Image (tube, rainbow, N blue to C red; front, side, top):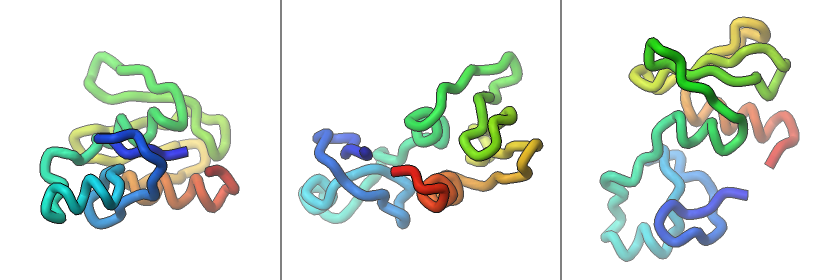
Length: 102
């Protein structure tokens, strides 16, 4: 279940702003979501446990194959070299939903 980062109500993903914010909070803010963007670390760590590496990158167990998934915060991307899936927050959530997960 995904919740609003401001009020914790259940919401859907805001594809245009790469954030989790409900329509009430969005409308109260004049249709702007400035400073509400979640990092790719926040997005992926809602689904898997991530460990920070000494080089500033993160890794965890890939949901899709069980291999090692790497997250690159500066590029706002992720990649699993085992199943060769990767992309940004949107591709992670899309693939997660396609796999039958909530």
